[in-house]
Image (cartoon, rainbow, N blue to C red; front, side, top):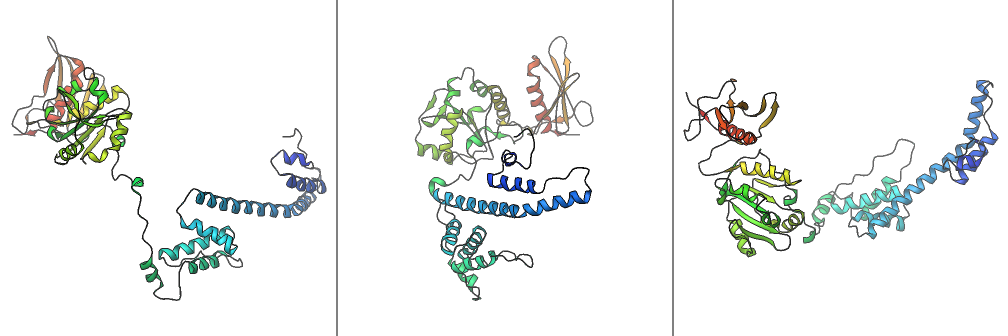
Length: 412
């Protein structure tokens, strides 16, 4: 950029991005018709500006033509590039055919390709809208030309029916380009407390061998602590070996592929969870067709701490024989006096320390008072106040109590 703005100097316009031939023409117009002094009459200054604009009008028209030519050249170059990349769009071939054989520019060639495609697809002829009165438009004749070259016969009353019947079926998709009809395990959501509970015999747990190897500090001790977990189906996934049978006592073991398919096909699963690292997830994605479809399909993700919390949600939804509890998301809140949670019409609160030791948890119903008079579906009476020994277990104890009350009945 020049320090001084001198519109009569071509370098001033070149520094502002104008091509050399444009800069010279603009500078010439400013030299021929420079601005008049500010104290000149207003009419004279306006007339001088109009003279300069009139002199620059041919340049502006030339710039518009250059821009249009660049647009057409860029569009044709794009089509040629797509064909070089093995594009299967037949309209690209028709566009270049219209340019090379019929001499059409971009707009006309594009309309020719649209008409050609419509005829081949068995569609009605729908040429572009006519231009405003007094303007010519070569797109409509080009569309009609392409429609005729594509096999359309507008004078034949059976033209559309004939072309629709003869339209070629789409080419079969190659097997390696088929997309899965369901999300892969790596795309499954994280476990929450929202899905409905499921009996343990209808639950499938797929553990990565990295989790199984660290069973002393991993999730296996958490699994062993849940009643009824031994009824669940356990599998292991190895980044190289694939799916393996898993036993809590003997560990992973190889299993025949057909035997595994038959085993999973005959199982009635409602809940599937995958706990694996990235490499193991990539391997299970490759064999995802082996896994059955289920009502709830999830996988843990993010940090180890978050995965453990997600796994606790999954464990809490497991229902052993004789268990009866409600599902749903518990809304937790920190109050001045301590933690509280709410599920349905029931609220569980931390009621402070008990004497001589322990901590009190109280459940209230919609009336705001202690939830007396509630029984489980098996007739067992529920008590609205319980004591726990460790305050760090208050959240899990409150969650269990809320789910029992939300599934209970009130008699009398």
